[in-house]
Image (cartoon, rainbow, N blue to C red; front, side, top):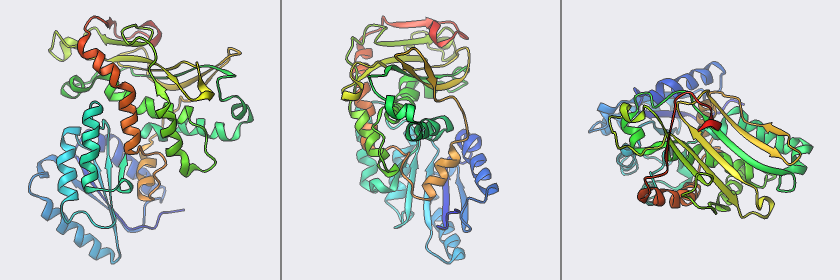
Length: 370
């Protein structure tokens, strides 16, 4: 059913890569499928307009709302670098741009460690309630992830065997064939742990390991509970516990011969949930590898393997549609964000003082070869 809520979508960073590669194509598809509201307007704000243009922006929004003739929700999508978010959050939340029908969508990374994430959550909470904040993790809405949840609900085999009695290990892997592709400044500040594992892979782990609720609206709480049970229980300095690596030409690309930034990371976790006791949960991601794929491998004790996550789709269509419809099921809450950082905090602290464990790997090799 087509959503009816009159909506203005304001994209900060409208001239950027995310908007052009994902958001605008997703909006075009939603329009072609007749899924956007009858009263819908897109407003783009580019970087050069971030300064003193907010009064002009609000005048523009008021004119659109006057033309609509009805109460209109304002959705602000911050498709901007993380460092730009706090100032924009403050300018929106502390001005008349924010109305009683305002939502704000934030892209990852949500901070760079536990401390900065905690500060960012507190900053956002000064201006917006939790219900007004939508933290985007589009991997939770990809086709394969959704199929995994459907299988868990409807396939009797999965219903009966989704626990330690039948499952030997769980692997969640995201392999990318490309390198950093010119994202030098961003990647030097983040690395694979922050760029991918902290958000996409841990959120998928939460969906995979959670006790499946009867009602989909309870998924966020179940996902949070699953994350709270995840821990590192092995020696972080050992590669079988935590492995970090860097492809061989990376330091030349970033012009930093001493760079310790990882382009590959693999983390071996355990859950304290009685249903998963003793089951290795291995999260792995890397760049400049042999092929591009993302999948969830469920290794059963009878040695069969189900690759449940392997399909790609423009999940930003669902991101935008769910935000318009106020469906928060597959958006990350602030507690979830802090839990993911809690899980990884010990790794980050250990890496600060350890410079001997970085593996250098050749571009184009497989995940297993790193």
